[in-house]
Image 1 (tube, helix red, strand yellow):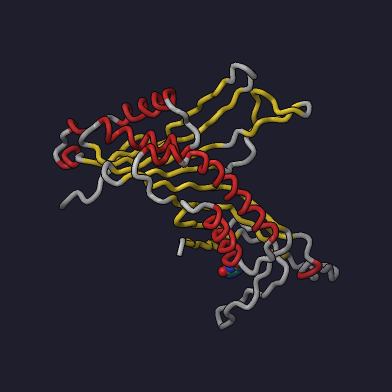
Image 2: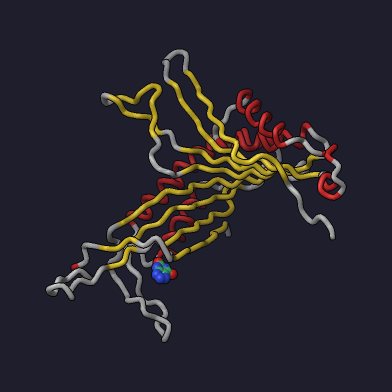
Length: 295
Ligand SMILES: O=c1[nH]c(=O)c2nn[nH]c2[nH]1
């Protein structure tokens, strides 16, 4: 037997940092859940029970908190890169780091018509995430994503013209509910070093805002012929929004809402154009994926 791959570290490191603006008194919060995994000359800790090469996962956790104290934690692409670069710089036998940061929403409250200086609410389970992989000789691969943004449109979605054969029972529709949990990822061109990441910092927040707007605007406005067609339009627009992005990937569950026939009860019409009451389905669900890349 041979050890063909190995990486280890600390997962589910919950991190909160507050910024206090001394002049305005406005406080800003950031809450994330972090995973840092290390790769390198660590084989003997697996194959020979030799722990001399192990940076303890507890030390990894300590390092995450210390670097969060000493560095900006936003944008997550920057903090993820700072975290990823630290370990190969500190430990000569660690050659690569894989970082995942999940950012939870704390949306500032509006109180008495004004943004409140230090009060926030969790508006949904949507998260803003990054995955940063760094190799000593390979620079930074950064993937940014929006996940868990649940959307629904009550019309403006059709699905017809698909294969009809002896396996098909699904009826064609020109007007259906469409709902999904958005999982959209955009992959940046390789950054050779931390300076290259620092130079692009403003683009990270901007593209997250643009990608979120593109996703919701397209979802709302597109007369959707299918999940496939609509997600391709979203992907094209994100690619066009930022030259440094090389691939855009969407993974969208099709969360079905079934019509409930009622004509058996006194002839009540509740299907097709008369449908008003539906049964939201927990499963099965369609799952539609695509990756769209620069030419
Ligand atoms: O948008 C859709 N795409 C599909 O591939 C599909 N299959 N059943 N319903 C569907 N809706």
